[in-house]
Amino acid sequence: MEQQRVSKAMKVAPAGLTYGANLSGPKADFRVWAPRCQEMGLELLGRGEFPMQRGADGSFSLTLPARSGDRYRYRIGELRVPDPVSRFLPEGVHGPTEIVDPTEFGWTDDGWRGLERRELIAYELHVGTFSPQGTFDGVLDRLDYLKRLGVTAIELMPVAAFPGLRNWGYDGASPYAVQAGYGGPQGLRRLVDAAHSAGLGVLLDVVYNHLGPEGNYLRLFGPYFTDQHKTPWGEAVNYDQPGCEGVRRYVVENALYWLREYHLDGLRLDAVQTIQDDSPRHILAEIAEAVQEQARELGRPALVIAETDENDPKLVWRRPRGYGLDAVWSDDFHHALHTGLTGEHKGYYQDFGRKEQVVRALNEGFVFQGEHFKFWDGPRGERPEDMPLEAHVICIQNHDQVGNRAKGECLTALVPRGARKLAAALLLLAPETPLLFMGQEYDEEAPFQYFTDHGDPQLQEAVRKGRRSEFKDFAWDEVPDPQDAATFERSKLRWPEPSAISHQPSGKAQMLDWHRKLIALRKTHITSGERTCRAELKDGGIIMQVPASAPKVLLIAEYPDSGRLAVPAGWREALSSHQDGYRVRVYLH
Image (cartoon, rainbow, N blue to C red; front, top):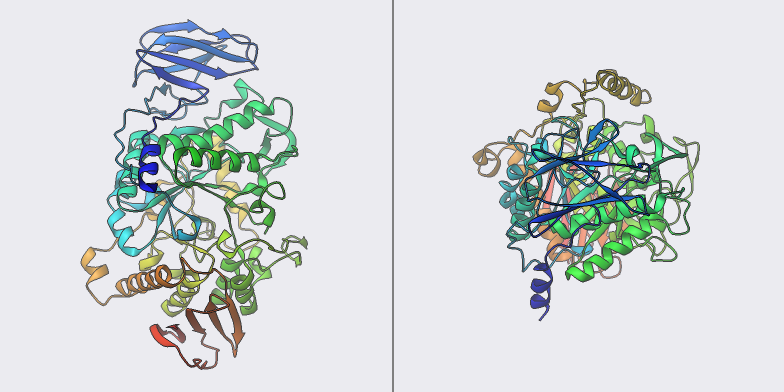
């Protein structure tokens, strides 16, 4: 009965968006929210220009004969600009919008049941650097490999249209448009459909705290931004000033659009601490509630995960006490473990480096729970009471922690293999929700550097200067030029030949096997059980038992300066490694 319910829900045709171009038979309904405009025209390429009718709410509308593939743009004064709700910008962020029929794709994922939070083992990747092709189809070609690795979902860095051909995605200028160079709307649909067929979920990173500076035409249409709040990017997105109702609708509908039209399993919201909203109902709570309602209608779960560095449990507390999100990216585990292994103590690493902090992160999620944080010169965080450990997404590498180093070095270049094995074991056997960054499972050696492809020379130089300034606290002098195509090429994964990674006793095969075995242990003994932990520091090593009350898994992690820790009676060894002075032993009850 449950399977039948899910199948029926997944076959529901996508509802049209409030704005944008929505097809209805041989015609398209064009509608755009533009309260700053008194008149507007629509240019349908090859057909001419047509005046639009202005409504009392500041929306302009027009119905014309049109079909999927037709291209159009709006005229505002002397300017011709794309639709703010473009599903596709095949000629880039400055070009015309192409009409997309979301019902054209033949989905085959009727049986996909979705992904619950407790099942999540995420694999973060950047579409442009993950494969030689740099496309959605290039990711699709590796789905069988990822399934064998054991992860349960891929997490895509932003795919909304950005300027040029190379970008991390956080300079997106059109939140509804799928980047043309990656394969556009149909390419993303092929990837999600194939992932579901392989038993993998797909999460998407979305950016609601700012838009990129190039190709961003929203100011022409309405009060999308406000100077009442400041962000690292200047003016804030307008979530609480006059006219904010239309802006909030724009963002909430965008979140639902990804779930409905692309069958995505969840969203990761970028840097939510920079979202400024003094409304009685915070935009994050509105997004979370709308997504959960949409999930009920679709008959499958949908996750909303926030990135934040503030250690704020309110994000996941149930409404009305909190915002009701499913999880947060929890940095403290990474910072505590990374500093202990690398010895780095510059910048935001200055408050970390003690093994006791790794233990606290494992037991409680947050290390800083209101204590003084030297890097901020003030208190950081709150007690994570009533916040389940699985609501903390933890990692030993992600795009920020690798790519926001000046030269983008992975752990492969920073610490010995034995240390990386220890880190992977703590990550994958912890009760928190683990996230892997592309390539870490086989010791990828390529860096992941920051790259852009802006067309404006002034913006190009501003990005170069900003990148150099960003690392003043770390004393990293050599900063690759983000605009240089070579920076992007260096960042592509150097996939080994299958024989070298799977069938020979190479270091890469060794690490891949280590990750596969740890993930298999996690799925068998941790995923479905009680998600608690009893970790302690003993004689310089870390002992972790999961769950806390009736442990099924015992991990003993010893550092080069640790003593040899004894194994309690009644445990049998399941996995071990002794390399570079680091000893890791996993036992089952």
